[in-house]
Image (cartoon, rainbow, N blue to C red):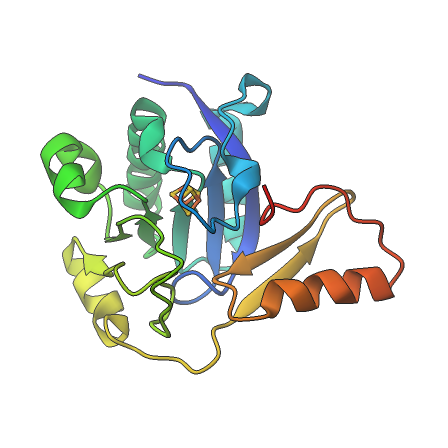
Length: 218
Ligand code: SF4
């Protein structure tokens, strides 16, 4: 069983990628290179971003003390490291069972739904909901939590059915978008709407921030 995971970043609370207050985990590495991807910093499968799973779980358990509604796993392409993803999901399942916490697990993937069903059934069995299919920049959408109109929100468990049913076709005029600053990075969490990233860039410049690499420009 994998004991490590390649991780780009983790954040709590995330309120823009699934219902409630959530842990967000962005796995590092994506071979899909969707045109228009805003997360190009997650593409490289670099080994310097390897984290022991027990360390990641300990962090999750610590932040969850203030309340946890869900875990959202994104990337990068989470299914590009299937052993690590499976081990992470098993650990989350065990934690949920032992503590009785009622959090759901939502996962994004740029892989087609049919392929996920054919190749990754054991992983799907550990998820409550998934948003699959590659991002298509030419098909904008106002569907909540979706990057493009081809991406369905699919509940996969009874908890997922219960929690995500109100959101399957929910259309929002303005999608929520969080901005997080750590000591060396500014990043947006959520699905950016038209002009959101240009506004973020402009606000950073106005505040005297010298921007290095931008993840939405390759
Ligand atoms: S949109 Fe997602 S799946 Fe597509 S290239 Fe970017 S990180 Fe990969």
